[in-house]
Image (cartoon, rainbow, N blue to C red; front, side, top):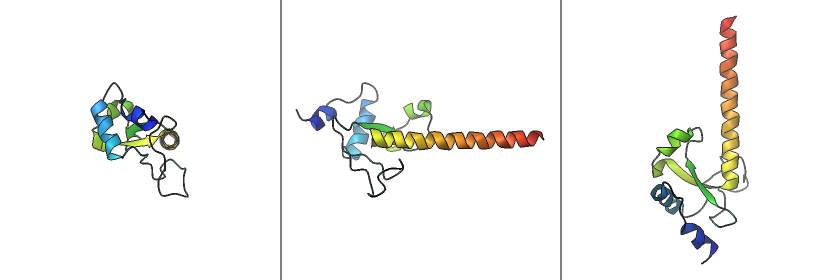
Length: 112
């Protein structure tokens, strides 16, 4: 069994049908087109699902809460490699921190 076949034969224990649908629609390739902040010299990430580069199924909207993510359908999910997933998550955390800081600043100014 090849690495790609090994990965494709082992969906996660939960939400396996959605995972399979997302992976098939992505053709077992990372769907990131630069939202991670990396691979700027290419239009899309070149990674495919292998043991060396496992793909993750994540919400298309990086600001989706974990609880909301559990309720999403396959069309609202996408496949990304670990490196792109980390970059997307890092940018989402930075954006969330920026929004929280701005909200705090506005709240403090309203007290004055």
